[in-house]
Length: 437
Ligand code: SAJ
Image 1 (spheres, rainbow, N blue to C red):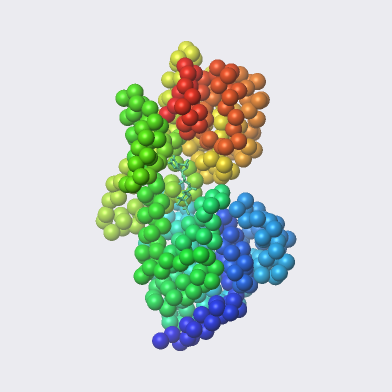
Image 2: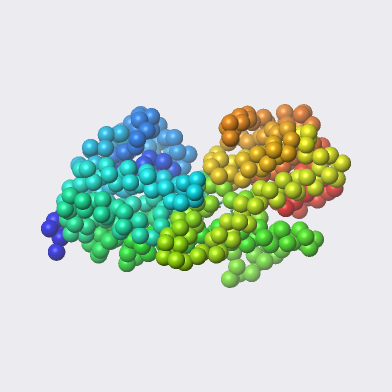
């Protein structure tokens, strides 16, 4: 029996009297905060960045997926406000933690942001509160790290307060699948916690999928993203062998995806970018290693994917070679540096590795990317130039690293400049100056 009947919390969720706190107002936390507000809850956003809090309180959205009109309306109706004052967490009925979980340089999990957030929650933890961790992390984090910190003052999880894990599944820029309509996995430290978390999300998003533990919920997200990383690694290896065998891997994939079952297309590319796919599998392999299990697929996929930038540079060298030009001293222009199409994020972008490798080999670099006006990498600063300026500079080679929808490739094809296409952006166009992965 809980010392605070769970139905008190469930009642407050049902009547929307429950006060919701969201810690971490980035591409996960801000859309979630707005969703809770639009569901009728009064939401307080918590962030260490005072600028973010100020922008939200002025109804300004800094996340492309959060429409400014929606945000401003929630603020106007006093359903949403933001603060850096973590002491207000004590007044919340439910608290969602949506802070980053990056890797350290040693490729070990960095839970420092999670620990900082949980310390703030623990400082004002009250009976009856529901705490949910959304940050992607290894199985066992909620039970082994978060729960002990929250129980330090004697309150017991799933008795005095409720604790669950619910993986964030936000896909930045995805217009079709949003926080509202992506099914929400929830796993509590006990049945009361699962029930409370399911009730909260059930009042907010289209579908909730309760699972039996926090570890299952943590593992679901890691399976989802490890599945991607391993299959991208596989298709990159298929691309390397297809090139050796004189086979067009893009044609192979397009034909294979006509199979209506049992196959899902992945595409070769310059490498693995973003803050999820290159990171999440290493949270899993790190934890598995603690149990003495070696995740060979994850490590192998990591090797293949992280070798792609160097392979792209090798292919650039081959292309320049057809014009009797060395990389050293050649002008190479990149089309796109963001980690994937139509986003502005350059975290872990393979284009950064391609730039660095080319610079090491003496190439002169420039780039175009409408989403990334300037680039600072390893102390080097590069400013984007538009495509027309790029053509005027008469580069020796164009490298399509990110196939943004806005790019017009025709002028480059007509100019006869060498083009290395790492994304099949030139779909099927061929010619002596076009080189595809
Ligand atoms: N990539 C390839 N080939 C592919 C697919 C992706 O090289 O076939 C590259 C991309 O260019 C990028 C990296 O891999 O550099 C990651 O791409 P991604 O499509 O997986 O996009 P992300 O990193 O935005 O992943 C997110 C994830 N969402 C969450 O973690 C909540 C992932 O689970 C989604 O499946 C993915 O978006 C998606 O489907 O767009």
